[in-house]
Image 1 (cartoon, helix red, strand yellow):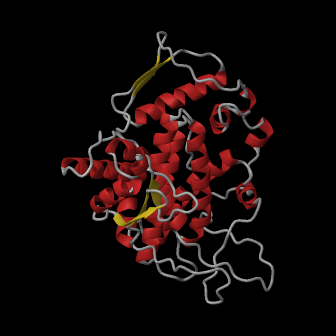
Image 2 (cartoon, helix red, strand yellow; image 1 turned 180 degrees about the horizontal axis):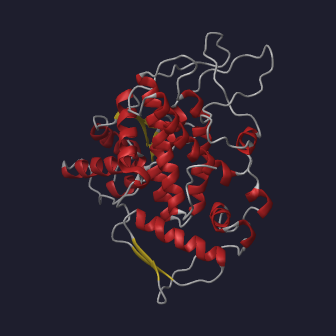
Image 3 (cartoon, helix red, strand yellow; image 1 turned 45 degrees about the vertical axis):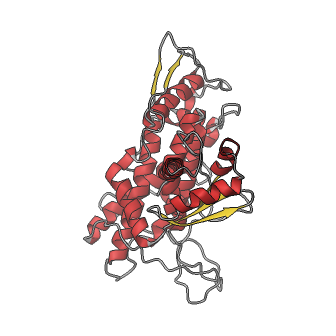
Length: 376
C-alpha cells in the first residue's frame, strides 16, 4: 500500500464513521500521512484525528478510536495504534504477498508508476519566463502537476510564477544543467559545472543515471544466464552485522563507480555483473543486504511525486531519486547467481525488484526531461 492509497483509506474511514453517525464532521478531500515522528511507531502516521476533533466536539483520542475500528480491517493494514494525544500510527502488511503486489504494480505501470488523480480539478497557468533555471523549474512543475491529474500550462495569460535563484550552466550540456537547476531548492545555488561533469560516486547526477544503467545491465546479464524476472519471494535473510554465519556481500566503496566506468569496453567480452571491492584481511564480512530500503522507497514514490507537485518543488523528487539510486547500487550485488549457482526463483524476484526500481528512476528522469541511458 502506497501513502496515497493509505490516505484514501483514511478518507473512506472518516466517511464511514460519518455515515454511521459516530462523527459529525465534513469529510476531508485528502488526509496527510507521513513517516512517524519521534515517539510514534509503525510505517506511517496521521494527525487527522487532531484536525477533526474541534469540529466533532470530541477529544482527539476519541476521534482516533472511532476511526481505528474502520481502519484496522482495511486491506494492506496490519495494525493501527494510537499514540500521544491522538495520532494514528499504521503498520502495513509487509509480507511477501504485499511485496509481490507492489513490484507487479510498478512493472505494470512502468515509468508512469506514481501518477494519479489526486489533483484532478486543479488548474494552474504559469506566466512565460526566459531565465534558464526558472524556465526549467516551471516546465517540470507543469509536468508534475499533470502527473497528478491537474491541468497546468505555461501561457501568455498565466499569472503564476515560480521564483528561483537565477543560474545558467551552458557548459555542461542540457541534461546536466537541468538536473542542477532542479536538484537545488529554489533559494539555493545549483551545483557548479565541475561537480556535474565528474563521473564518480560523489556526483548525484551521475549516480542516478548510472543506477538506471545497472538495472538494464542486470536484465541483459540475466538473459545471458537464461532467466527473466518474476515477482515473488526475494529469499534474502534478515541478518545482523557481525553475524559470523551471515553470507558475505559486495558493497560499494568511495570512488568505485568512477573506476568501473572508466575502463574501456570490449564489445566482444561479456558484460561485467559484479564489482569486488578492496577488503581488509581479517575484516568482519558484511551481511547480505536486505531489500527493505528499496521496497520502502518504491512504496513512497507516489507520495513523493504528489508532494513535489503540490509544493512546486522538483528538488524533492531529485533527492528521492538519489536515495533510490543508492539503494539500487547496494542491492544489485544480490540479484544474479554467483559462481556455479543456478538461477532460482529468488533471483527472478530480485531481478523484478531491480527492474521496478529502474522503471521509477526512468520515470523520474523523464519528468525532469532528462535522458535515461542504457549505457554510461
